[in-house]
Image (tube, rainbow over all chains, first blue to last red):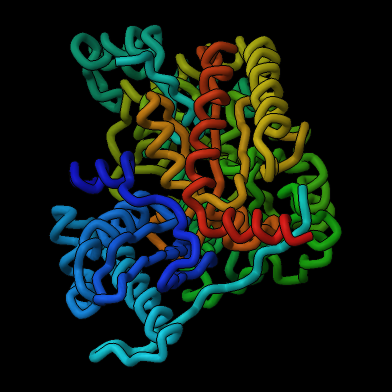
Length: 145
Length: 395
């Protein structure tokens, strides 16, 4: 059901991991619905994204869209990264099954959330960026079984 | 390509070569319509009745109480809709459970639209129906109790004899969806007071597209498929003779091997469960530890999602299934896992492995070894796991 590109990015995801002291980090999604994406960005003083990393809880498409989104924003300016839409992510992956389109939306939101965090940390306003909806459920129970 | 390890026998099973062999002559040689008068059709008629006798005997029913259908879903639809229709003058209340297969749940929802009232009795944390609540739900207008024999996702076996006793004491009909149980665990429609029972051929190494509904003599259930006098006027349509022969042959083999097979499968299942629970942290077993189908193991792995797990297992030649939202095409994980009280985020990380008598210990060990790597890999990518580990470190 997935394209070869999706399978490739799921099987060999690019840029998995964390960035210590990131310029911006954003987490979007909802454990209840089965998808959470966290994106870390390292942005230099010229506003260029030097590094992007991600961690994702979710299905094959969720992992693949996260991976592709990090690839697409790397080396771009903040303004250019804003133009990386869910459609761009989908096209780069040669498409997604209709029920998985929301994964690409989540990837776009993850980029926006990380950029928003970067803007807040630096007290700047990024033209065209709105505060992302954060519907993350911080509901990790500690009990063991 | 590596050997395929098929651990999705609750979804469907391999048709045994012996079954195909028994079916073959009824495609090419004895292809006559068993309803025909001429002697050429007699062989097909006889094969149909022989299969019916085998299937009846396996559940302690009479051959004339077995009605062939197109499969388990049709049997469930028939049992619920036709009972509702036939007994509507007595009452319009039906009792079922929260963990039934959708063939029952969606049919019940349809009946609700038709003016019937349905009570969904909850189950305990192991997926066993609460008998006290079941009995308390019975009213003067209750006409049917429908409880599955064993759950398809978590394998829990329901107390059919107790339910049958309750139903009989209150003079309510008892239907059981035995699609997963038929040919796998002992069923006795007499001892268990079962009035109608659904079963399917392809869950016990028979062909797809053939099922049965057992209807106790005296139960007023009318035809559901109209158009012919087949099956004592109760189920129209030319007999699927090859399917019936295949179902009968597979059932005979299943009944004969049941004891030995379930001992073997239980041993493998317990080894699988023991290894997974001891070697993979933050894992739970779904369903009852021992009161479960011999071939069913169902787990939830925290911090990961089921579909990713299935794809990675598939890349290792292993077939399993999951109740995660992504595998169902909806946003909600399995209703069964939610019904046993699991939160959504844990239900998303479910994995069902269902064995067969052809599964080997090496298959199980290979699967667990790969599973350990897969879970570790997915957790290393999971923001939920990252947060959990950071929280643990702060303590």
